[in-house]
Image (cartoon, rainbow, N blue to C red; front, side):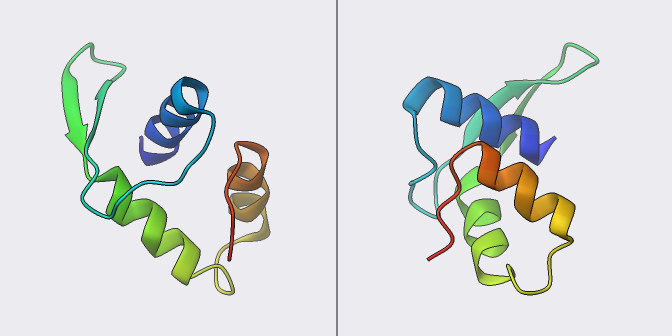
Length: 68
């Protein structure tokens, strides 16, 4: 769900630079709207890049993640 929110943000904004307080609204598979703490999640992914699965790093890199 967080990846889907990140992808939605990237498609709309063209980047993944946001404040840690950014909240993204996304409609889930059950058609319920949710608010996700996307800014905090993106920041956490950046700070944990050395321990993330290579697949996750590749997935986020494809949608514009800047790691430094």
